[in-house]
Length: 232
Length: 66
Image (tube, rainbow over the protein chains, first blue to last red):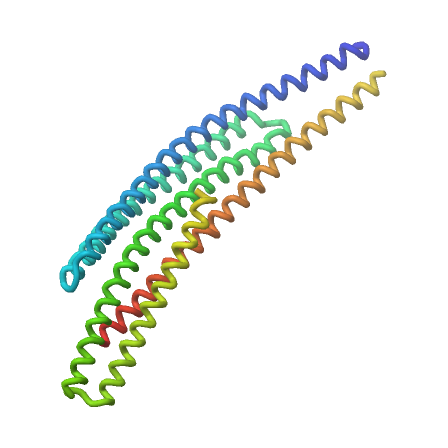
């Protein structure tokens, strides 16, 4: 029979071997996860750069649009809108591609681990714990997907903000011109007091709507600043 | 003596098994919380976009009426 000390040493050696084997498995899985994460990070970086470019381009266009008035401003705004839409479309495609890729990889690694478990865990209880590891990998892929989705929304928000600001600028200009025309019409007695009141009311309503839009844009910018610092 | 050693070994094994499980659970919880936070922010951004688009449409409608 084995006496006390050798038995203890044997148990310790078995525990150490068990830990090493588990560590090796974890390392392998960690490697796969790391590669996947790295690729997702690269794509994320790319997405960030594209979003930055969109914002810069849109801001430059918005500056240009501020310099011109009337039909020129309208044409410039239309151009900005179409360019921003094109860029947003491209970015959306890119992000969808990345999300699909990450999802595929997550599923692939899940299948790999499933096969690995089936091959090794026959006849012992350790296989039960491998379900958690699959869940871990799946969770990481889901977190990456959530990050990418958020990035896509951030890019969309940037485009919406630029478009909204351009709209405010154009609308204010249109309202100003309409008020001037209305005053001229009234001075020239080309409209009745009732018509004047009605048009004034419409202009006030339009101005109120522009103020509301401006408020929403300010709120969105605040949200972007608050969440932008902590989350990405 | 043997019984003592066996008991210690079993206790160590149980302890290591429980510790690993707890760590895994903690990591899974942290990850779930992270995903939830990301999704919350995404939803807030989405809501802000919708609000701006709606307000923008209202401006368009009222400007057309002028």
